[in-house]
Length: 140
Image (cartoon, rainbow, N blue to C red; front, side, top):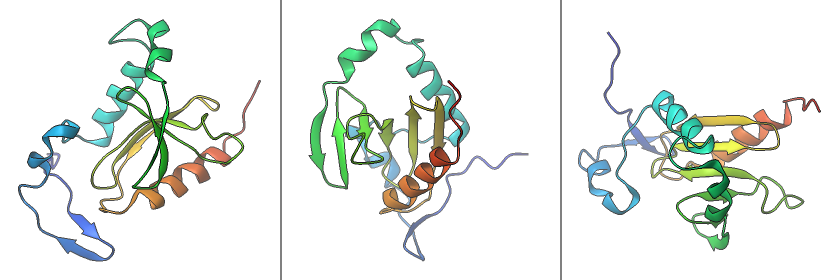
């Protein structure tokens, strides 16, 4: 039997107990999901399952945001830079509240979902995704 309970949330190395926190984040969608379910959704979203794929560029009206971290936000999706050279051509997707992430990297055609279960875990997750991307050989 698979355990479907949400994983514990941490602040650095200290587990924090906030039983109603996730259900209180209505403005961000309040989605509680597994990495596998997030992957299914991300692939469907990127590949035009919800709307014609040619409309996808309309979502990329990137506006610079700073906090938490540096990223660009379009219409419901974020563009997370992975280098200064490719400032607006980074990871496309979304950060969750507790270090969860769901991103697509167009240049390598990689889909990345998961969590680090940290309130301030975005930098840890970003470094991990960059490391994975750098280790992928692009064949053209």
